[in-house]
Image (cartoon, rainbow, N blue to C red; front, side):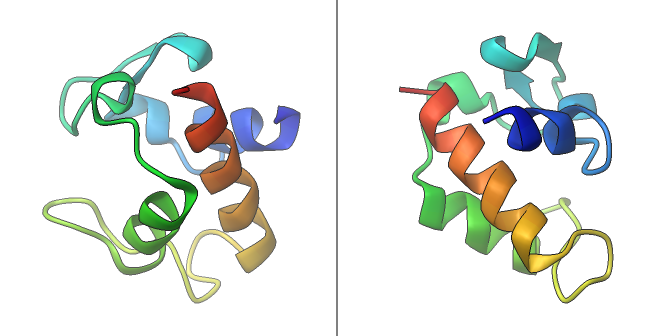
Length: 80
């Protein structure tokens, strides 16, 4: 959870676009993850491939597979 939070707020910069109370983020470009409550698999797919205006972060472009696993796990658990 700690690594996922760090990636969400720092390296992945997810907090700039997404609202997630657990991360104290108030982004309003992407959907509110608090409302969406995505599964780990949904987050992983979106992060790897991109979705809508969200760019792809996978294939070691920005995040490693291990970092994607960590942030995906974190988002799912933080929205339950």
